[in-house]
Length: 310
Length: 310
Image (cartoon, rainbow over all chains, first blue to last red):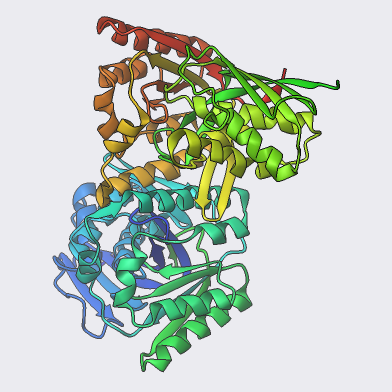
């Protein structure tokens, strides 16, 4: 029987980026998710295997993001073949690093490539957003869009859906530190009040506008002054033991900006040098270590192209 | 006796710019304020004459923005001369077009030029902000900064004070329509609730970030999609009779964006063509005319350099 096979990778992502709650996200080179897809007329409609998740993710193809998105795509394209999906999680789950987005994107990207790219990335976006809906209850785009397109993505609007690529200055390095604590996304959402003080919105928008300007002018100093969160971080910091000390250490060791990655508990820092980025990671890890919390450090350049075939 | 004389102009400004409440403002070529300063050792410390204000502005030099700022400057520079100030208002007062800012800036700019520019514009900024404090009760920078520097200005932060020049795409033309109704700034402030729904902040920040991107990429279509206010305009629109109809007419006649200028009641529209800008002005004026409200139309390019010596 004829079997078509493909292997692909999709990266972790940092959403919110301090000044862009629910509207900004960027992709990093690694870690991320890998998938092997096998497509054949003779397979059972769908078989799902998952490695690297310690048994945490649902194996029912109707409940896992990777298979939900692949099913949607096949329905959309009118393809009636069977698929074997082997997803390998090479990044922490529930970390605020866009794990579910990477799973949604890696499967869709791989299947699209295997079929000769019938869909553009813009056409794939609403489909992979459905994976987010399945994983998080809402079809957010701030992780899936940067995961799919690479680089820094702005979600300008949901109705109609419009995402824009923004330039990331070339020297930026991202440090991510994932502490081994459990902060469910539902809790991270629940601690956010439904309203924001107008005066805090003014401060935040001043910084957001300056941050976007800094991206276009490659002004690292301005980027550092601007990338400060007065709205979301104060609410979520309490869910991460030692957050403010970690942030202080990050700034002390050279971070331009440091805040919570997505809904946490991972902390991201941006710096302009690989050595600094390593030092920042160790400094943040030490803060968690003092509290008997293990953590993993990931240091990476910005990923400009999104997922790739392996 | 030796008398030094100078004559200068400072432009009207549009603050808020739909997506940048309290943080964005731009200057237009005209209308604006004119001042004639005469400085001499032998004058009484300060004499103030005002033309064109229908007797509405205070003539006490301790209470008018133009003289307050000049006094502050002379104290700052240790100058003990007398000054005769003749301020000519060539723009409507209480219009949301930055009338008090133009007065603050024109005097400071003229005196500085007459003295051989001892202060940079950045040094002048905190002084002219004191004029705004006298006029409006708060030392806002979103009118005085664009009036002083020209172009589109972002007030990133007040503590410390940091303003940034942003690029304005070259084809942009501003239409301003000033209806002859009285909306005190205090009322315009009072109708704003102290909090904003987080979901509205998300929509607004998505548009703000896209607007800043559109400025750098000279993307007029994106600028048009992005320049929408979900936060402030809904509260203030009710203070301007027929606002939504006027806005609809502006869009129908070619406006890229249309919202309230500063705290109103003037309405501004941006378009990419002088003919459109004129048509938009007439269309908005017609909406007011139907309600028996007279209005003045001002159509102008963006002012890139701020005040000028006449």
